[in-house]
Length: 115
Length: 108
Image (cartoon, rainbow over all chains, first blue to last red; front, top):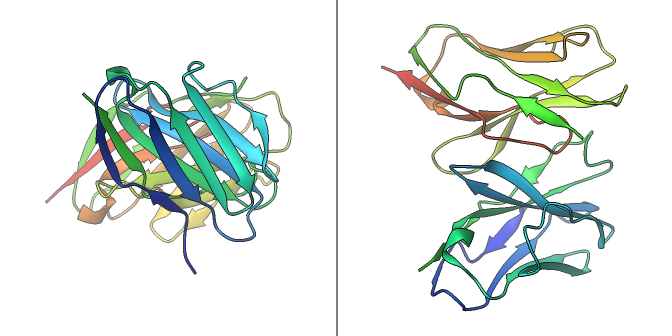
């Protein structure tokens, strides 16, 4: 079975540009999570969805960040405009059932570098 | 709010030895699950072991076992017979809070 699929694996962009990260969760999973990982802050939860509806976006750092889940098999995380401090690895994860009781399945991450 | 504390940012152990990673957490919930995840240098996050809070028996998975102390909100991971492939970041999220983790290095 295919796992969580993220694209791109690596993205290098210049400050001010728009960045879009994509995620395809595991089929049948009803929870989708976006995380950001940096050395300074560790792995932080940005937002999560249940049945395509955003449930908690309190981790989204600021208005430059937005996330959508138009259907059960696709989600995007957009940064506009991007800044150097957004450089990090962004992970998407999915789970079946209650997010805090079930195992999270992670993608391989998208490494973003903003110059 | 859920919080997690892994007091050892970095640890190292010799191959074949035993190592214990500590984790304390805070939650207001009564029924919950606890997990240990491993993130090797490849970046792929992998579930190591899971503990259900209402079960008193500590979970065991091959060389990995936990010491779950519910009253103390402590959830440590013991790795026996450490292998080079155990080198990774380890996280123990209560609910969805992962934090900075513990970096474990297994030396030959």
